[in-house]
Length: 239
Ligand SMILES: NC(=O)c1ccc[n+]([C@@H]2O[C@H](COP(=O)([O-])OP(=O)(O)OC[C@H]3O[C@@H](n4cnc5c(N)ncnc54)[C@H](O)[C@@H]3O)[C@@H](O)[C@H]2O)c1
Image 1: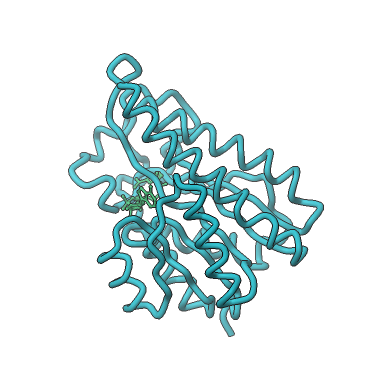
Image 2: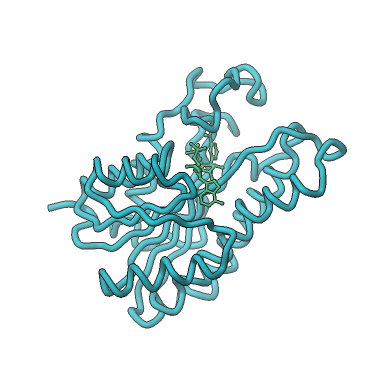
């Protein structure tokens, strides 16, 4: 018996990296998985490989969120888990950040998470159960000088998670945030470990599978009393 047997999950940004690893792990634990992403070919290939469904989806678009939720409800009848994982990194300091870049990073990393929580909340409230996992970052714990807009959005995700947990807890819906350190995915390709804030005590990147293990635990009943909480997985980076 899997930890997520029969649970219906939506994972955004599921075409590669951590989202794909979470999809694979969720499938292995028995979940019905919907991967969404703007990368259509990659997303469809991962979904076919792991036995999930792929939906083309830009998390910044409120109408596309509606379509995704309606599709999943029509097909699977419920939504048990939402992993708001889609995100983009942008290297620029505060003074270097253009308004266009700022708006793009905020739209994907912050507004996308807000829209996702809002989109699934009615179905989860009707079920009187649900589980939302927002992927933030260790960038939510200090100033992110070299990637200013990214850091700002990850602080926002940390805060939004708590506000949503307060509102949705009485309906049996949990909302938690996950704070990865440096994870070996396409997002970090080409970024030397030494560049990441004084190094990592464990002296290595985490694999996407290691994050997927934590996210899977949060999605399962093993973590049933955790909500509004922050889960750091960073090899000691913030110690
Ligand atoms: N890699 C790291 O070191 C690290 C550290 C901390 C937090 N994170 C966070 O983890 C999450 C996953 O990142 P990853 O490391 O797997 O990176 P990744 O770049 O491999 O994957 C991100 C995915 O999000 C998708 N995406 C981007 N914009 C989108 C949009 N508008 N709509 C839908 N999908 C979109 C991308 O196409 C991609 O498939 C992100 O939120 C990221 O900020 C990553």
